[in-house]
Amino acid sequence: MRQRYELMLEEKANYSIKMMARLLGVSRSGFYAWRAQGAPEDDWSGVRDAVYRVWAESDRRFGARFVKCFLPDDLQGTTLYRVRRCMCKLGMRGCTPHRSKRTTIPDKNARPRPDLMRRDFTSPVPTYKPVGDITYLRTGQGWLCLSTVMDLNTRMAVGWSLSDHMSAGIVVSALASAKARGYVAENAILHADKGTRYTSRLLAEWARDNDVRLSCSRTGNCHDNAVAEGLCA
Image (tube, rainbow, N blue to C red):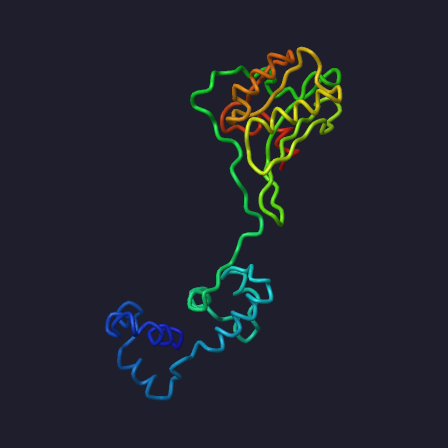
């Protein structure tokens, strides 16, 4: 009952006492009697101090749920609603430490390419079946794009390229690096997803000039390129 009265006290500037009493299932007279007994005007000050302390000690990363979990024992009964309200009033927000970015964006206008791999992630000899993928790396200076080429026989990363922006050029650079080191044979099958970088004209021209066959997985199916996806996970 006390928590309901405290909620009404907190929101009395925004909503009428009559409406809040009806919604919360309490009586207005009971609320006024509680106020008359000396209910403090700012009964959330202790909670706010504890919320700020927990949030600050987390390097300003915790959201409301984590803040609630790390409150002192005497405040463990504090509701998640109250923690959120305190954080909102103090201008505090949590942050997600492992944010991700979407890397595979299909090109609707790209010419269809067959899946020559068909989930057969084995290769009788090195250099015959390279697979590629792109991922983002979060650094102190911002996001970097990493394009990789893996050989399915040795399971080695045989080519890679870094850039501060994602383009077809980063894919070609990684492949050129692998080929220069002798890891892309003639008539090799390069398998990747259907992202715009792997269906680009630039890559198609490079593949034609270097006698490489291009193979694409199905849209939205990570299992068709599972080995390369695992390397960049």
